[in-house]
Image 1 (cartoon, rainbow, N blue to C red):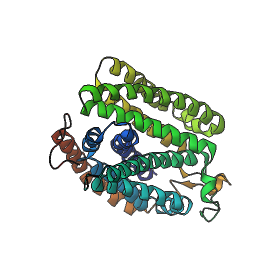
Image 2 (image 1 turned 135 degrees about the vertical axis):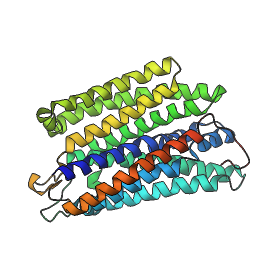
Image 3 (image 1 turned 180 degrees about the vertical axis):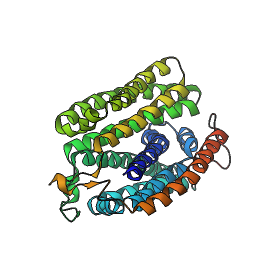
Image 4 (image 1 turned 90 degrees about the horizontal axis):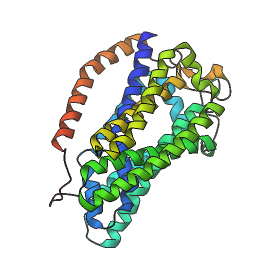
Length: 338
């Protein structure tokens, strides 16, 4: 059971890493159409240009780790979220294509079309991630054979859509804070105003989602009774969110960004705490849920994976740190820019 818990935690780390790193570049995409002209939109794209593909590696690693550690849960998830996953994949691919194709021609119509595609794909991706989290909290209809027995539109429940909108607002806030660090002049001043709007929208949705979650998903607090230290994660989340407006008022965008990242990590931790020891909750019968015990690989497989992770994770973290250090500072447009 210890190895299973270890991999549950590592999956949470990978998911949090992805949400933090790809969250801000999805946020930049969500805000992309707010730029006034071609130069500003190029600045937005170039702020994430050297980073976005490396950020998505965290999602690929999460999927690979889930497949290897909990293959039964991986199979069930794809049977239930197959169309949603295909839409997500299409959105992520379209974002990449939009960035690469946009600057190939100087036609305003050409660039405008790709700008709309880039922003729309970012919104769709962020929304689908949130909908998946909301459905996971509510549970999905899987039978005794661990097969999904519903349809795609069954996943679009009001609570799931609410969590999806919360995620869009969170990534927009995260992206706006990131743009504050990467821009200057009049554009930076407008981005700072967007940050306050994004924070107000996020805070409203956050409070509403919290109330609905406590009402609709009472089991979300079940583990807090057994493990009181989980309330420290709640405290971290609240303190991180509270520090964002403070840091913005003091014009400390870097500190606000770290607070936003900490809030995202805490939200992922709370999501995991609400699910544990389940991976996929069955809304038909608790006995048919996918848990750490009935969905995992063998102990030998988990041990081998743990050794690989111990060797690979430090390299990934070092690579990520080096890339972000190299491309730090304000965006400067050049001949090779997007």
